[in-house]
Amino acid sequence: MIEAPSPASTAEPAWQWPRAAYVHVPFCAHKCGYCDFASVAGFDHLADRYLAALDCEMADHLQHPREVDTIFVGGGTPTRLDARQLSELTRILGQWLIPAPGAEWTVEANPGTLDAEKADILAAAGVDRISLGAQSFRPESLKVLEREHGRPEVEKAVAIVRDRFPRWSLDLIFGVPGSSSADWERDLEIALEFGPSHLSCYGLVYEKGTRLWQGRERGEVRPLDEEVERAMYEHTIDRLTRAGLSMYEISNFAVPAHESRHNLVYWANEAYFGFGVGAARYERGVRTVNTRDLNAYLRRIESGQPATGPTEKLDPEARARETAVLMLRRIAIGLDRDDFHRRTGFKIDELAGAAIGRYRDLGYLIDDGPRLRLGREGIFLADGILAEFL
Image (cartoon, rainbow, N blue to C red; front, side):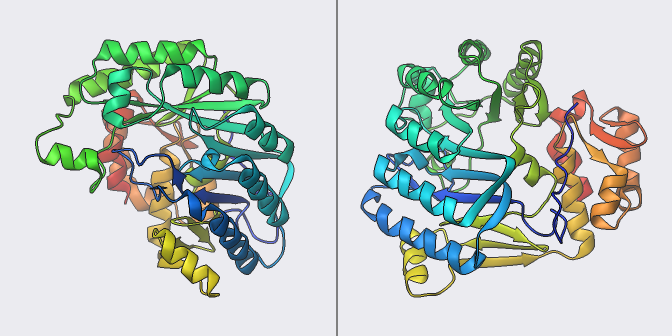
């Protein structure tokens, strides 16, 4: 069983002051129809301005270099940057973020955008983990998702990554319209042939406003039956477990010691820095989100103004309930009662005793005394169960 990340020795605990940093790079070759992230296509000409603005934002917010345990560069497609720009990005991050001994540094990449030169730049900078967005190996599913790569590009990217990075992951999506359980099972087998130590397997979500959502609303896209999606998810859990990749979070599987340490920060509801368009930060209980508009982000930063938009500060009880929901997403760790009390000041049984008792009796929650964890059936009903903790 993996252990929850422990706060480094600082003046404030990790659930108050960040030991993790997220950096957003919004540029893409194409905006996929299911994507609701702050990403843009056709704006590569703004990349140099964006990097300069990112440097300014980090300088203004951090004031001086900060030591962190994890860095995650996401997108968009960070590897959409050319080699010179990618080198400049690593220079900026190296100036403001100091990886602690044994730190994890992840960069997301799309197949077809990562070549040997870019990979060498990342490896030389200290990046030790790559997350590849494969999504599917089935041409029909890739077309529905509006992905612009195929299996050959994934194979090439994996070959580049294997030789340079000690840890790497593949992202996959199941429940794609027009696919069958057999199609998904084949996708999993192909992914396993590559030998990843980490897989993220997400059920397709129709995010409001996306082209895929609009197609569903117009009746042009027909979602899969819920029972078919459940069968896909159930097969995922069983097959990856047999392959030695344990389910450590609702959508994430890894061999021991290859879990995403950065994402474990989120699931413990700990603090994190966030930089770039659309990025969120969570510091001393306050969550702030930058504008999702690229041009607005550039204008604000270049004029010396903050790029922040909505700000939220939960009251202690609301924050404790949110922490419970996030912790229970961790299938292996679950929620440790003593740790929860230490972090939030609340006892979970006083906050949600009725829900705990009901779902424990139904077998959806496993309660061994010190910890609460979702049971097998509880995993499939997680959304409804966790909503009650809020």
